[in-house]
Structures are given as C-alpha cells and as structure tokens.
Length: 334
Image (cartoon, rainbow, N blue to C red; front, side, top):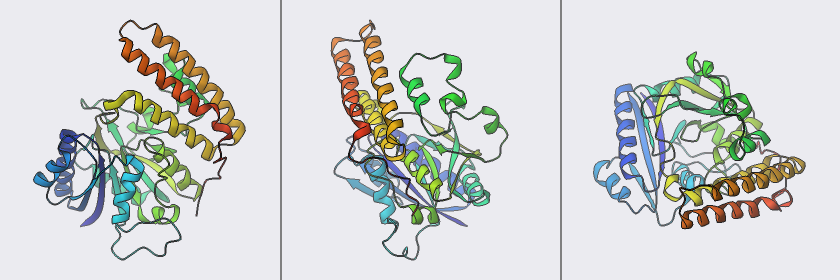
C-alpha cells in the first residue's frame, strides 16, 4: 500500500473543502493508498474548522489565528510533517516520500492520485507533477504553463487578438499533449494540484513565504529546475477545479496580491533590464485597464473607485520594482 501525505490550505471554503476531502478519502480507499491528510485553516469565519473536526476526525487540523496565505500555510503543514529548509540537518525518520498539495476547490476523480504517483515515479528525475484539471462539467482547463514573461503581461492587461490566448504565445501547452495521455515536461503546473517528491523539498527547501498568494508555485518550480529536477503534467490524473473560489471573495485585494507576487517573482528570477521592461508594460496595462473601467456602465461608483485604487496600488508596486532592494537573485539550487 502506497503512503501519501496530503495538504489542503483553506480559507472560507467550507462546502468546497468538504467535497475535496470526501473525494480524497474515496479515491484513497478505491486505490488502496494510505493517506495522511492535513488541513490548514487560515482563520476561516464560515465554520470550516468545525466541519473538519466533526466530519473528518481522521484529518490533522491546524487552525491559524490569521490568514497565512498559500505559501506559509503549506509550509506550516510541511514543517509538521518533518520538512525544513536546507542546512537544518537530515530529515527525521518517517517523513513521507510524496506530498500532494491540493486547493480546497478541487475534487480528485477516481484513480487520480494513483496516476499522479505513477507518473511522478516513472518520469525522468521528476520533482513535481501536476494533474489534468477540468471544470465542473468536465470541460478542458489549462493545467500547465510556461514561465511568465513580457507577453504574458501583455495578454493579461492589454487587448490582444483573442485567437492567441490559448497558444504558446500566452504560455499555454497544446491540447494535443493532454490528449495523448502521457506525462509531458512543463515549466510549472497550476498550484491547485501538485504532487511533490520528498528529495526535491529536501534539496531546494520550502515555499518562499514572501509570496502571500500567487506565483509561489512558479518560484518553487524555477528553483527545482535550477537544481536539476523536471516538472511534469500527468494527463491520466484528472482533477476537477472550481477555479478561483477563495480569491473571488475579495476581488480587488486578490488583483493587488497577484501583481505584487508577480513583481517579486520577476525581481527574484529575471535580470534588472528585463524587470524594467516588465514594469513599463505593467504600468501601461494598468492605465489601459483604468480607462476601460471608467467606460463600463455596469460598475457602481463604489466598485469603480475600488478598482481604480487597485490599479493605482499595482502601479505603485511596479514603479520601482526593477530597482527594489532584493535585486536579481540567481535561482537557488542548494
């Protein structure tokens, strides 16, 4: 029987979390996988923690008094499992060989966990494996991406031809790769579902908690690839992803968090000249977004003011991002 640790970080997603955990235990029983499930509740106010205690007593529940975010929330559970950053000595006995990180807005389809484990174990020097994500109705959802660059900023903020959005120009992988049914090498999966090898965490360390939300999985994968690990998408493992359920709760705050994290990612891994070009493009995009928002007739004055302030905040974040004190840091491999 395989042993697998599973970590779910939740924030006000009680019903989705219930469906996620139910799918995990059902698939584990079906596939004879011995699972050790951890839930980190980020100070939810919707009774999520009570639900886990009452309906899933076998789950290890960590209740945080504050919203730690995705990176620090996962790190909290990973440390409980015995992981730490490099330089802290050998891992203790009993640390799981594989850890599956799931968003609470996911549901694993039958056989998904076994397929992920098989894909990670068989693929060449695989450190991280992502699943094939689908929407509730089973329709296709992009699950794997190339590292972001200048074009990805332009696609997100400026009016580019719609026919190009699902192409490699926007960091997407061809549908044919998913349909062929074999693991394929990628830059990074969507962080909603990631199976991670113990040795990779031991070598490159935990998530960078400087990312509160967004881009932490991209940073992790860049560091993993710099250390010689490969990242894969495993299309045989299908997972339903009810996209964006946590972040929809505070849209403007999520927008700012996204672009703050992107600024950190670019500063950390790209050279200053590239970050300077990205900063100019972001500021151009925010100006265009603000103009488009002012022309919308469906926004209330309050909603418009909130959006415009979010655009201004992102502009402030990026204005000096290329000269920020962190500077360029070569990807850490050890």
